[in-house]
Image 1 (cartoon, helix red, strand yellow):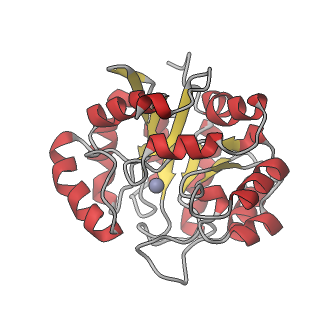
Image 2 (cartoon, protein in one colour; image 1 turned 60 degrees about the vertical axis):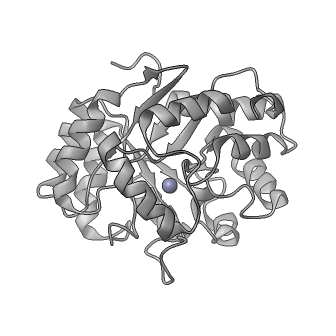
Length: 282
Ligand SMILES: [Zn+2]
């Protein structure tokens, strides 16, 4: 399979994967697989992710952990702290963002702890965590994250295993960005899974980062291409949502888009490298 993949000549960063500690992966991944209705590309462990990424020509995979309840925050972050900075695993590397639940007691000071632990950002999921971006309960969190320079990485838009009405929309992300202009926002799925027309009307061209996970093969390539061009490659991130999509397949689909080498390099490497300070952060 490896030889079929056109390897770009820069270190590809996948900014959107979901990994679990080994003991948890063997329980959680089969359960989610049944829920999502598709088999995982690998077993959800750090080692398998890195091996799979190396095979696909991906140099670094960034894990986005979600705390589904406040009491999962502490142990999740304590585990992933060892990967808060880019860490070599076999022939590839893994790094992780932190988790935070909107109802974590004294969440703003937890943001400080997360920054001190060395994490570059925090993942939020409005469906699993049952909140909206502009809920007042979130304001202290966003302010603390903007101060600390942490990236707020969002699941955005629809979700395969949840049903409408969803807890987020592109216009709500725009409102949040206008309320907290210094907050670094990375919105998955090109700003709103299944809400791409609304993204084109509201978010495109704004100073927020959008990732490509669950877009390639989920929406027309012409619209993806048009959105990348209008938004600017310097604010687009390459993400796969592995293990729920196959990284090699997603990367080869991405490389079929008629983008320039400069744009590919920005999307696959430069933007993520700068946003997450994957090199040289201590
Ligand atoms: Zn995801």
